[in-house]
Image (tube, rainbow, N blue to C red; front, side, top):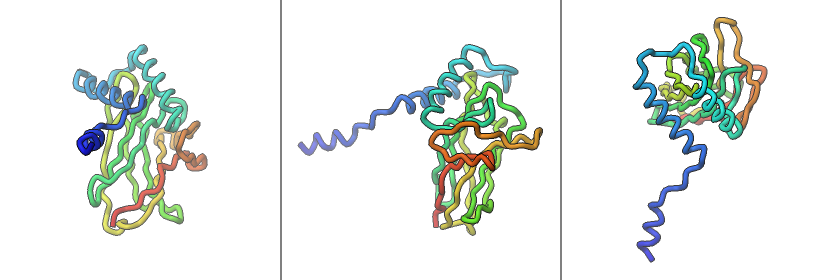
Amino acid sequence: PSMLDRLRSGIPDVRTIDQNTEELLDIYSHLTRGARIVQRPPSLPRATLWWGSLVRSVKLGVFGAQFGDDLALLRSQIKFSGERELAFNFQWHSPRVSPQWMVFIHFLDDDGATQIQADHKLWQYDQDPWGFVTYGFKIWIAEPHRGKSYRVRLGVWNPEEKTRLPVTAGRRLTIDNRECAVSLGVVRMKE
């Protein structure tokens, strides 16, 4: 009986279809990145983009946000990767990623003032043939922010048009239409 309990505790949880799909898309993305000769194809293959759009639609039904007509946030994870390091993990989908799009991430205090920014260009990350852009990055938390809680807001800025892409749909994310952004929740910094 004691061995049976020990063996049961070693059985991993059964993965959901979404988790399996994400894992397969990540594998395909990594494989196709290494096989590319050109850094970015001028246009994505129609058939693979169609499948990618189908997967995007399914994923958006569970979690995510649609920015404008062409860009969808499908995964957003924030976790601590060290005492003073915060790791982000994102997955986006778009038939075309504009070189101008700047993802802004603001850490807001109780008064709504931005205390930390983690802005980055979406273009710097590889887009796979299915239209997915999957990446992670980390930010260092400075001493004055330790132990404080911040609301994390994310949006997309188009400097060419000097506007934020509007959030046209969202699932399991709070949408701030005035700011054209979504709330990723509250993060309490480690002491």
